[in-house]
Image (cartoon, rainbow, N blue to C red; front, side, top):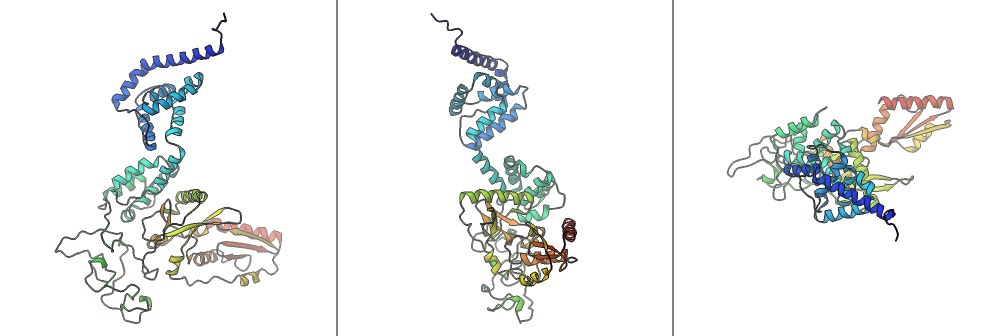
Length: 480
């Protein structure tokens, strides 16, 4: 009869049985008492469910773990004791498939990784990160917004890894009325929250019913009483104390002149003298955004986002994240909105472009002319050595006028955003940026440098001279 005591199979089974028996004894002793203690503290069991429930179970359990002193392996034993139902069946399958030695050394972090891969995979983490990126206050109170901000921020720690980034992210999501009151240089996250909580507008916005709904201050009017807020001006008649929605005078036709009410021209070219009822200049603190002064009195234009391929959507998510981290854009709730698309560059990469064609049609064009390329080439006679600098983010050195920021809004599948800096695609962007660059390089223009929009061409007749020209150009860029 064969001796089975030295059989490899029996040895492996013995080790596995011994490991399970030791684990059972530990749970029944010290760890068993700790399990009971954690239950009394409010620790709950997990039986399977929605992805966010699995993540919250881990999060809450780790909070309770702070109340006990255990090794990482013991924490894993305690944690798996709180599994039941389908989750318990899953863990039993994993445990049987794990070698006894590895099972005995498995700590809490290892278990957590396996558990989250099963119940809270990467795609769900990406959804939560996107939800954080798109988070804006809208109808929430500041308290509700802050609670959701804290809850979702743990899915995007890289976006709040410095006090400044955390404060900017929080301020960027509050309603514009509150944002203007809490924004300040060097303000901390805690200061921003305190200021927002003390504002009288710490309440959800209410949407006005009817066609005249707009974003701004919601003013309460009692029946039989006249609205008496002098800071509000009517778009229709120019009077104060009421809005166009409640104006009793005849409605001004769309596209008509603000001064005389006639069709065929705008107020800036009206031959009629100014009248007393014309609206005075808007105060800087006015909370209702005005559009007519810079976009020829046009109504807000918002276009549905274009369809994109999965690869483009992935690239869009990456680029939006990068722009948010750099502080170039922020979440928006504007009435304006342009679609986005990608243009493939020569090197195969994708350039994010915003289709501002409809906005550009109603934008007052800048008078600064772009030079003819032929005229620029005439300056290169005799030059033999050339270097070119492409200012890829050059436009982003120019801040957008505060009241014009909402007009730069663009719509994507991941939410609406607006530019805080000049964006490529706006009709005035090339001329304004080129004007700036010509001022910066005025000492070298027509001598060793040609500027055309965001390209800088350095030219020289000799190599030694070119090195000096290139060094001077780079030094000037660093200084500016």
